[in-house]
Length: 114
Length: 112
Image (cartoon, rainbow over all chains, first blue to last red; front, side):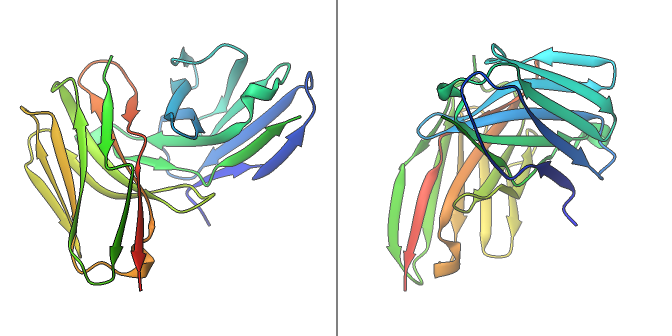
């Protein structure tokens, strides 16, 4: 089983719909992140969380919200999806203990907004 | 803001060649640098992590170097194989702040 699991893997939704992308991890890491990837732009940070009570905006948080339901679960919501939110979304975790901070990524969710 | 650049954007080599992928970053105050591999439509697989105090890391046919003062890292792939075909991404983590900054990647094709 993957250490970082994202569901769904693919989703097509209509403009204006609310959609939630889910992420769960078995690595026991406190830090979790949501990124989106667009061709030619690389990965950009949407939100990150350092523990259940800590939520922070990244560089492109507008139009998104998140929920950290537990240490192992971090969900990303699009309240009212729009076509330019069509992208590949990645969840990631990292653990700063021991000074490592290596990042681990899920397999991605391909979201298409029509 | 940290800017990460990867050159070239695409590279095609015959099987067996040694090759170098480049990553440059604008702010040398980094905590670490990580190289990833991404296959089409797939997630990111961590290849090598270099802490800011390190000069290089090796894993099998891969060797990553870091020159923090000049803002550069290279990923050396020895004896390339068709299975190495993928996009390679580098990401830096700043000393301050809490995110990884990614380059746009180098798309590598190894021709049999």
